[in-house]
Amino acid sequence: MAFFQFEFLQNALMTGLMIGLIAPVLGVFIVVRKQALIADALSHITLAGIAANLLLGKWSTVFAGVNPVYMGMVFSVSGALLIERLRKVYKHYEELAIPIIMSAGIGLSVIFISLADGFNTDLFNYLFGSIISVTRSDVWTIFVVMVVVLAVIWALYKELFVLSFDEEQAKLSGIKGSGILLVFMAMTALVIAASMKIVGILLVSSLMTLPVAASIRVARGFKQAFILSVIFGETAVISGLILSYYLDLASGGTIVICSVIILLLAISYKKWKMTGEEKIYGPKSYDR
Image (cartoon, rainbow, N blue to C red; front, side, top):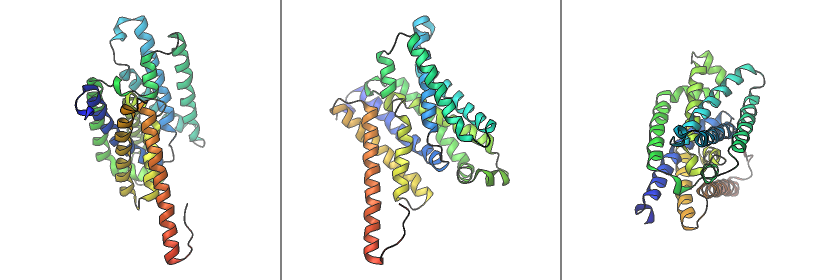
């Protein structure tokens, strides 16, 4: 009942529900494209934006009153666009784009943090997530991001579906892959930046991949994986927020552990189901 009595818990719950929806939705496309590490790269470049804002806030009163999330979004979207650009530069080694941006994000973060004389409470909350730091302004920011992301997914669903499974075939079919992928990467960057207060920069990629990893173990098709990813994501967020409040734990880590438990249950269910079918139909070759 505490989640309905205190405003900061209401903010955390509303924010968590929105993140639990849009993060797995984008995560399905990311996992299918075999680019799960993109979320990690963008989270690190987002950290650089947060650290830069906190540093500028010490030097100027103008930045002191600005929500660091906005600077994080600028850095994150810029990193997403650079990844797509680098993928074109390294046509035969596209995977290099991700560690390049990740390394740049880590380097900039360390420099900005050192210039700001180390960690402070605000930066620690962004790193690992904190339900007490979520404000009503954060709720509205994530709501806008959610509306934009869902609108883009609805409008470009077919194109993203084809691009995710076969990018070359999509280009031959006349789909303008470059522009669509740039938009998709920008949406991913916005979600990562918006999720920082709840999950934390260092853990946000888990919410994009773990629910999807659980869903593809039990789903029978792409659309079912889509739905199950959202269900698993929301379950992890809600249970994680409740446990983090009553056990006084960091919300980000608790949500991730809940996601891991759901993944382990999905894997166990799949193995149990396979064993049951073998008893009925005899041994069979499965993709484990």
